[in-house]
Amino acid sequence: KRIVRWFADPRLFLSFLLFFNQCSTSSARRDLSKPDLAIHVAALSMSGVSRRLEKEDVVDLVKILKRERVEVLVVNGLTRYPNVRTRVDLVEDLAAAAEMRQAFGEMMNNAGRQTVNVVFSTYPIRSSDRQSFDGIASAEFEGAVHAFVDGGVRDIQVVGAQFPPKASSDEESKCVRMIASKKKAEKRTPVILAGNLPSFESTKKAGLFEDTQAFVRNPKAGAPRIWYSGVGLLFARSGRTVNTGLGMMSVVEFVLFRE
Image 1 (tube, rainbow, N blue to C red):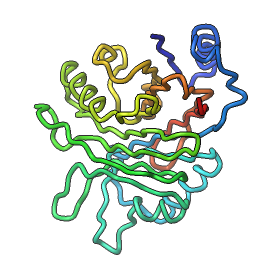
Image 2: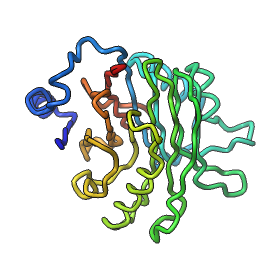
Image 3: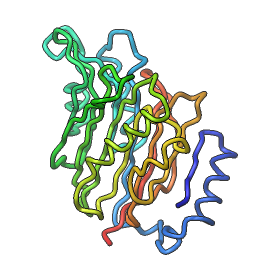
């Protein structure tokens, strides 16, 4: 099993491309320039945003999503006030402005103040499920949302996860195994996982999914990490980080094959 690392630094990104082309035996059997579907997936962490959201934030984010051709967006650690009309609700307002479906998993609800993970998608979302990290001592409210996206070619399981910031390595591995337990029964379903994920090297032995690979963030950029399990059908073709008014966003272009 090979691990693919990607950073925002152009030199390291070039190294990634060379490594990917030379070492990925699965993709070597595929012509990545002729996929059945190309899909742009982005990840944005909102856990560090403490200010009040404004309508301009939604407008600016929609512009960035269109410019980057993002079709699936994972947002982690978003705080919302769904019953307060004077508050901008990124879940509903972004979905409407960007014409995307949304599925969210509530992690905490304190007198109407919700903290959620969200998956936005221009493709239909067949179903979704929330997951709590029960039994993890360091977890306060953290968890994950699982959305099963109909990509036309085949379904993709998209997971947005918020890991406990003070989790030990063992606890991180337990969280990974919990997420893996939600793997769709159909083994040929690719999985994309995004969020404040821990070090891939420290958790890879936890057995997330078959053939899991990782796009590892540049810590200085603060962009979310993205892992994926392609099961021979999904491959990462390119990636980058994009600055937004709400933080650094990771964007990965995946290519998907029918069989």
